[in-house]
Image (tube, rainbow, N blue to C red):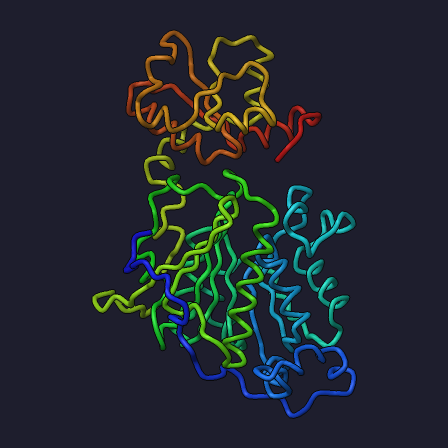
Length: 400
């Protein structure tokens, strides 16, 4: 954590805000029956439920956090849900992305989510935005919504969501998950901190692995997703104290919650426009891009090396637990960090070409840059990594 934070454990230390949305004119007889358990809560009541009906909420991603968030927003009676999602349902999604099922494999995640929402609550209108969220389209998409929920797993999109919300004066609920830990907060620059007050700058490329690299306990998505929806309901209806100005941290192994206070940085640069967030976050470092530019081979070219009995050393730079899942025969495991630190350089042969690979190509490009700087000028890496090998060459291998 790099922003303005301090420990905060006292109850009642959150921020109470006025209702975000005006109430709808009425609830139908069927809606009263559906939401009756909400209606008999004094703090929600008819007025609160009418506000939920009138609310327009945009969810970025129908993945691990988006899945439970969308289902519970729909069940709660949020009248309009927008989904920004460009991906398709893959089998590796199903252990945590509960809005999708086995019959949805290969389908658009946005369309699968829409159908599940219709089954949960037919009174909810769903708008699909089947596209990458970019600096060119974010403001136009955000414009029609009252509140944004961001459950994406990459820093470029998080900063984009933040800056677009700041420019439009909109609040958004943020969540993050990794392995056994989750985080959640509310950001609203008009009334308190924004995401840049927590993370003024993105971490260096490769320092923070994604869920695809590091994994995530499936049920953690439900824990953090439900907290995000809870915050959304409070913002829409104006009840309770939100997480604005606080970061909630959950550890599933310890079964512990703690919060830290987030302070607005008075010296922070003002957000005046949307920028190139891929460049800002350095998704892959300049050194790695330069190293890979002329030193990348395809999975088929790696197969050709094996078939011609060429003399080379194949190095797998993933982590040991990934190596146990699937590996390319003949590869040797040397995790990326041991190469970047220089610790493993003495283990590398000098009399043959070194070929690196990882899961999909990002980590091996970073390791390749380190090898080039260490004098292994003819080293190359495999674009697409072990996934490319499993999909294009040895299709009997599992993928993850």
